[in-house]
Amino acid sequence: MKITFALNGRETTWEIEPVETLLEALRRHGLTGVKQGCDTASCGVCTVLLDGKPVPSCAVPAARVDGHAVLTVEGVPEKARAVGEALAAEGADQCGYCAPGLVMSLVAMEQEPGPPDEDKIASYLAGNLCRCSGYASQSRAIKKYLGGKP
Image 1: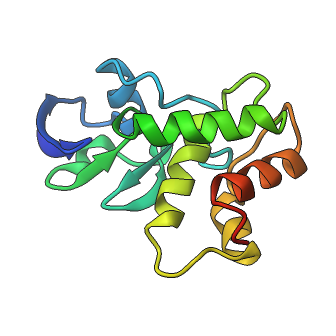
Image 2 (image 1 turned 180 degrees about the horizontal axis):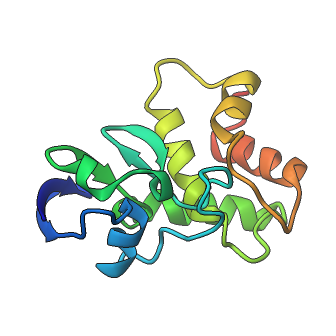
């Protein structure tokens, strides 16, 4: 089955299997920044933006993105670097496995109107699990990354 979609701002056509998830298709095509975690849409490590909204790519059939826009962490390298540096500075980035999904949730949050407050940050990051560092250091890092606004 053939799909055509915008991937990180570029029109892309892929041949996919009818039962393939977006996560599987992305990784098969070399986008390994999208991590595979739980396969139940509950850990957030596979988060990508689909038409600007964060989704767990393990739960999205690849066929569903035909005609849509997908943004992965590979499409936002400067932001990924800045968020990674903020996380590292606060000791929140130990193994880094959760960082790509966290970055994509932050990208989505920053597209919302108005400055993010504590509740908005918590809402956007609720599905991003980290098994290394805990969330206090992540919260501090995100606030510093956002410029101390919340």
